[in-house]
Length: 154
Image (cartoon, rainbow, N blue to C red; front, side, top):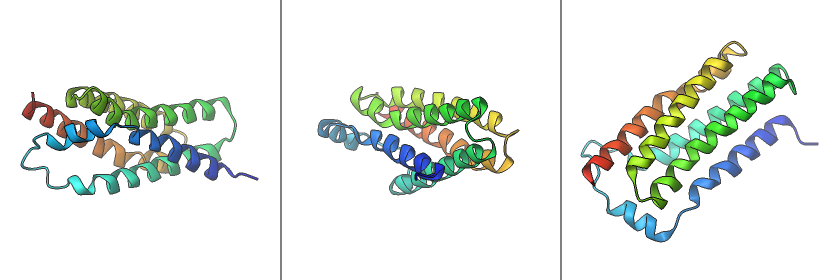
């Protein structure tokens, strides 16, 4: 029998794969973009996102375990899913539109959704809310970085 953590983990992994739906020509476009001189951590970004996704899935699991199957819990699960879809959409949107401005907009929308989700999760579980904090810290950094790349490559 599938346990809730398995389902949450599988959904997180499958949705995360959506960020790889990009075309080779878009990768070439992205690789040619100028980057800010302070962007020295680019190689760490996949590790950072892996940690953030694990924290998000763990947060969702804690929320599920508090009140499994209730309408509030399902609403929160839908909110976690929406947040992950928006987060994962950053790369395909930026690449397909060849616009880091569009990526920055998606990043900003993701931050707002993440902040609302964190506020909604807080009364359910402090730990679940704290596990969303890495995203709330990283999201503005990633969004600002995308905006700076956009400004360098108008």
